[in-house]
Length: 305
Image (cartoon, rainbow, N blue to C red):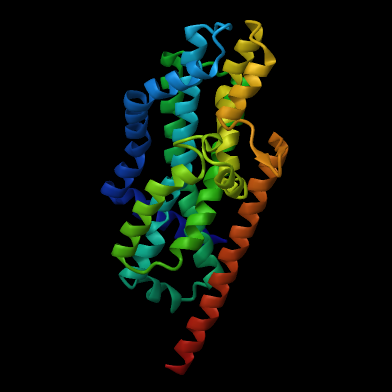
């Protein structure tokens, strides 16, 4: 265990020592928030207003709260995964510059080495994502968001689980990378594509039925829905207190992906947690298996050499 701790500290220090990578990871959520608030807030507001029947009136403050919650949930849902990929590039750097060879011929065992990369990525990503949560909470406060203390706690829990998921996913994918060019390519693809397939940039309820059905099998969809639920529950509760009909609230929850349907059944919050947790277990198991097989293969090659 001491070996894992030493290597984990080394990986964390190396990540934060790389000022370019660290500050890029840190300011990305803030930049996204500024861009979303500048260019997407108006579109989100118009979409929400158009979804409300003309005979019903919803106060502008609630609309502002819904927009703030939607923006916040989108940013956090994406950042927890994309930042994990940036934090996990240390494993690829070690492979690209040959450091991994020195570590593998040392007394360090393969499981300890792989565990140290995972733990370092998890800690680094949590630090950055909690900073992103703080930024988003400040934004929601000034934008008029509704976020009671209980939902703040649940939002923190969602971020932790999503970071664990993002770390596991990035560990499996980055394991097969071995050059700076591959790092850049994967980083670009993940940054550009993940937000769409998880429903963060655009609710999957706005997609066609076939695509909705396909995306409902992806665990990232449920991660986004969890964050969205706990970012918007306060606004929906305020709508109920102002006697907005439940049918309208349910329709807005469907439109914003607070409700996700699998085989035409509404997936409950506990089931969402179960699906995301199961995906984490599968990804971590896959990471352990590929590291074990790689370690055996490397030792075999070393003996022959």
